[in-house]
Amino acid sequence: SEEKSLNFIEEIVENDLNSGKYETLVTRFPPEPNGYLHIGHAKAICLNFGLTQKYGGYTNLRFDDTNPVTEKTEYVNSQQEDIRWLGFNWKNELYASDYFDELYGFAVKLIEKGLAYVDESSADEIAALKGTPTEPGQDSPYRNRSIEENLDIFTKMKNGEFADGAYILRAKIDMASPNMLMRDPIIYRIKHAEHHRTGNKWCIYPMYDFAHGQSDSIENITHSICTLEYVSHRELYDWFIEKLEIFPSKQYEFARLNLTSTVMSKRKLLQLVNENLVNGWDDPRMPTISGLRRRGFTPKSVREFCERIGIAKRENLIELSLLEFCIREDLNKTANRVMAVLDPIKLVITNYEKGTEDLIGENNPEAEDGGGTRVIPFSNELWIEREDFMEVPAKKWFRLAPGAMVRLKFAYIVKCEDFVKDENGNVTEIHCTYIPESKSGNDTSGINVKGTIHWVSAAHAKTAEIRLYDRLFTSETPDAEEGDFKDYLNPESLTVLPNAYIEPALADADLESRYQFIRKGYFCLDRDSTADKLVFNRTVTLKDTFKK
Ligand code: ATP
Ligand code: MG
Ligand code: MG
Image 1 (cartoon, rainbow, N blue to C red):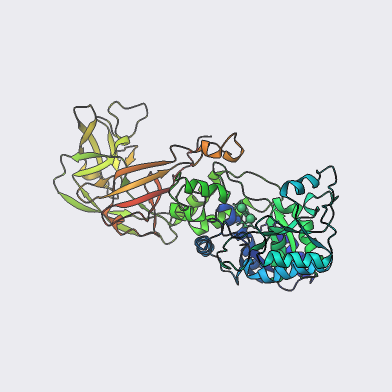
Image 2: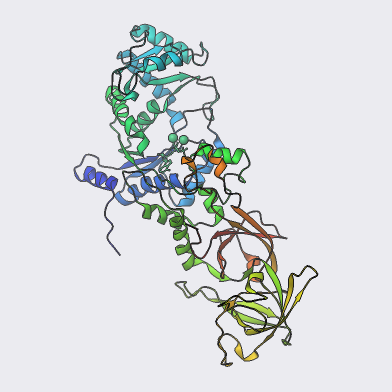
């Protein structure tokens, strides 16, 4: 196999392990439980868990749950399920909210060191003194409160004596720093809100910057990996660790995944769900891990995608077709080939007198174990695709037309003798004769035909609903468009074909099985299926059909 070069984070890790800086590699995946995980998170999951699979050590799952208003236990559960589905196991399940006591203690320690103060300025007043990137800010009038007074008010904040917004706690750093985040950042705010784990125990909550790095440090995380937006936070991350004299976790930043024709912020995905613009977080059109799973993606294909896009230091935009390539490649080896007619029209074989016979179909010629075979019932009345017949054939048309011959996959060559139309001029039935000597695998007819079409026996077929999906957005970059991203939703992202016919073998399909419907793409059973009606999702077409 080809030797892969190291990505820049692997290089850092190898150096740190080789130099003895750390004995054990410890990483974490730190989702905020404010939505379902998406394919961007999959990149971070593969990176963090992949490092400790490769270099030893372990990875924690830490829920970054310091914002009580947006977080829910439903999301905690779905996020765990999605990480497991991707194939990863965490060492410890942890919650930033479990550190609220310790974080409070850290805040007190900073106050005692003269490095934090309580401010009662309004948000506007604070903003007015913040300065600009080119001009220094000015000190708050409350910056030089005594340590005793700061401790007293902060205790009262914690005890619930003040309304939301009455006071905040700020780190006392440098109002002239070129890094705006270092200009006395807010570290605690009052928020009388119930938390999904700590209930009403707290009415003050730490800000992201005061929670994340300290949580890393509490867990002895060696390499805290995050996306590029946090580059400017690193100085503050290091400052807190230095002043608190705690374990020196280090932050490293990589480029987030951006994917064409979709959006990836949980906040935006939540809007699509809440406004019923999709059918829930696991709608097969969503870029969520649960949506991809329901669509028929395999964990392996998602991991392969993350491997292929790599880890870089600069932002880029990845084509959705690369994700589709990865699932096609996987399913090509693993999915059985079956026949399903999505838009049916009746084909009658007028000279077939056997009534019915069992034919043999290969399951998957690409399978490593040969794939085996199955029985496919054949009879004198079949369903074929409406699009496989043309009353007036185009040039180079190799499928059915009056007088034309075609092979029925796994069966016989047939010749179109006639067709029937209804009063509206729609073709309703095609009449053919078959060549008895042309049976697949035993063809002595000497007839060569160029076209092969799929079919199912009308008497044996099961009915199914088929759902076809297209891109969720018409714009390649809906986030970057003028106006609201939702204005660029693709009105044709879902097509439902309610009256498809499938091979009887598919009646045994389960939610884990994936199929290639010959000529139509890769499909999987949807959980909306009932005993009466099976529902299949198209995962992906056989070829890249995106119009560029
Ligand atoms: P979102 O805005 O989608 O909610 P987030 O970064 O706020 O993203 P978190 O739950 O905080 O979501 O993310 C958990 C981890 O996943 C973080 O380390 C974050 O950097 C990483 N992550 C989130 N989105 C992406 C992405 N598009 N590509 C790579 N990593 C990502
Ligand atoms: Mg976040
Ligand atoms: Mg977010």
